Length: 187
Image (cartoon, rainbow, N blue to C red; front, side):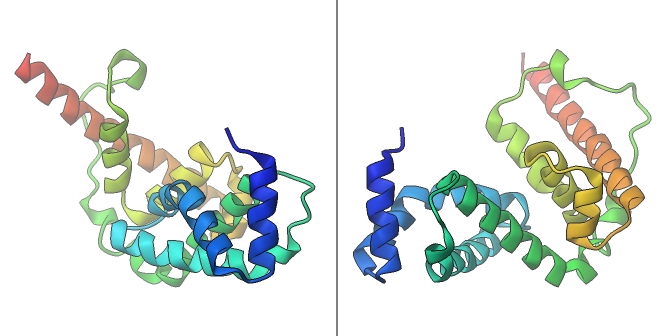
């Protein structure tokens, strides 16, 4: 549970530029924000770079937070926007390498509700998605943005957003089917 008095104290310290308050803020929220960054990047190293940018933006703009909404939500929004900015910077490479590797499965679909997967297995599958697929998937499924919002954020057509989501689901289905086959062979 988040202690609102502690958060207010940390925010006030950060506004004053206190290193100790900045350290407390980082320790309290870095793992949450790292998880967000990781959803929109290729690997942990890139996510750490984006996380650093996120905290620089938080520290530089914390004075604009007016305690009229969720502070965590305010920081999450910064993390998503910073991650999307990083994605857009790398967009010219996002579709080139990975899209050609994706092959539609001709087997019958496997529905996730029929199988059991660990959170780690699911995260690993999502991390394997080509960047374009992963970004749209996370924005739509995890963050709850609509296709129009995603198209505006990424500078892509609404139909591109929809097709990227569809392809991401097909790709994930294939990956989960592979895990399922491995699990059934172990039993």
